[in-house]
Length: 176
Image (tube, rainbow, N blue to C red):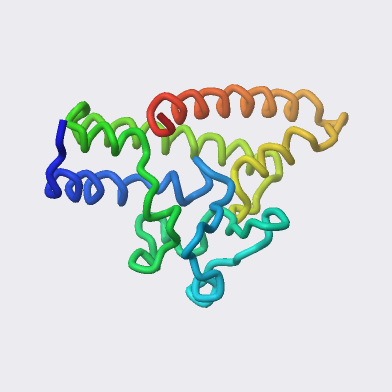
């Protein structure tokens, strides 16, 4: 099915400002720079560029240029950010899914992501600048305080279930 430009813009305009899961570390822990990205210019715009490997540069999520709704460097964003389209957006643009249904899926995923973040905070993982996956790994690998074992182990169990549900949603709706 062909998509006209108006449908494409409408999908982005409707969904992306209500979502942000690709920028807030819910979907990705980092974003690798691609050929043509100017790391020095992106750093001047506010991104902290780091070596991911010996040959790859990346910036960590949550993105420093994301205000919770919009990208502060949208016109100058990195190539990977320009080309990424989540599964929901693709399905709306293809006419396979109604924008209202997509917005409901976004709201559900955001609620689940916030539930995970709340559990992480309860387990002492309060640095919201770190990617959710890194906070989860730290929470699950931390020694258990045996004096408060029952509560902490219950919270870890809740966290595992909440992350499992979130990952299933993300795979089903956003990462296809």
